[in-house]
Image (cartoon, rainbow, N blue to C red; front, side, top):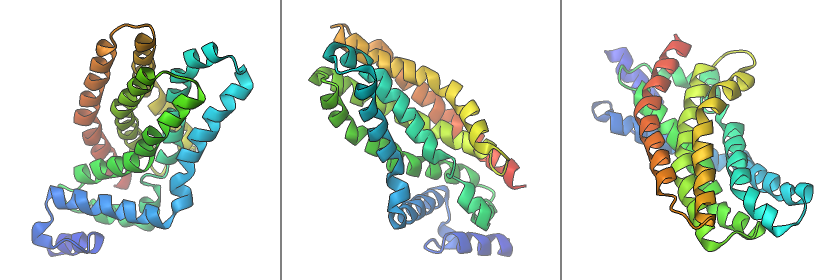
Amino acid sequence: MTFTAHAITHAFPDVRVEEASTRAVFRSVLMRDLRLASRRRIDALLPLAFFIVAISLFPLGVGPEPGMLRDIAPGIVWVCALLASMLSVGSLFAADHADGSLEQMLLAPTSALPVAIAKSTAHWMLTGLPLIVATPLVGLLFGMSGTAVLALLAGLALGTPILSLLGGLGAALTLGLRSSGMLLILIVLPLAIPALIFGAGAVGMVEAGLSASGHFSLLAALLIVTVVGAPWATAAALRISTE
C-alpha cells in the first residue's frame, strides 16, 4: 500500500494520496497533457495545419465549379478530420510508455479508466475542438450555405469525440508494437466509418431541404455507445500493454 501511494504521488504531484480519487486522477492527467501540449505548440498545431492544408488542396484538384465543391465538401471535411485525428493519436500513450510514466499512472488499481478518459479528452481538446472552430472557414471556402455549415458543425461536435475515443482505444491496443501506425489505422478506420457516413449525410439532407434529425440521432447513439464502451476497453488494453 505504501509503495502504491508513493507511486500515485510521484505520478500526480498536485494531488494528495487521500484525494487520489477517480476525478482527481482524471483532472491531473488532463491538465498534465494540456501543459505538455502548450510546451510543444508546433506538434499540437500539426493536425489543424494538416486539416486546413488538405482541404485547401481539393478545389485545386477537382476544379473550381461551385456546385460540385458544395456537394463534396461534407465528405472532404469528415475524411480530413479523420486523417488529422489519426495523425496525432499515435503518440497518445507512446511517450508516457517510453519514459515509464504510464506504468506509474497505472499502479493504482482504479487509475486505468480515468487515465484512458483523460487522455482521450485531452486529444479531443487539442485536435477535435480546433477542427470544429476552423470548420466555418472551410464552409466559406467551399461556398456552403449557413444551414449546411451549422449542420456540419453539429455533426463534428458529435463525431470528433468518437474519433478521439476510438483513437485512444487503437493507440492502447497497438502500444509498444512494431508498425503500430499501420495497425492503428486498420483498427480505427473501420470503426469510424459509420460516424463519417452519418455526419456527411446529415449535411446532404440539410442541403436537400430535408430533416437531418435521423442522422444526428444515429451520431448521438454512436457517441453514447463509444463513451460507454471505449474507455473501459482502452483501460483494459493499457493494463495488458504495460504488464
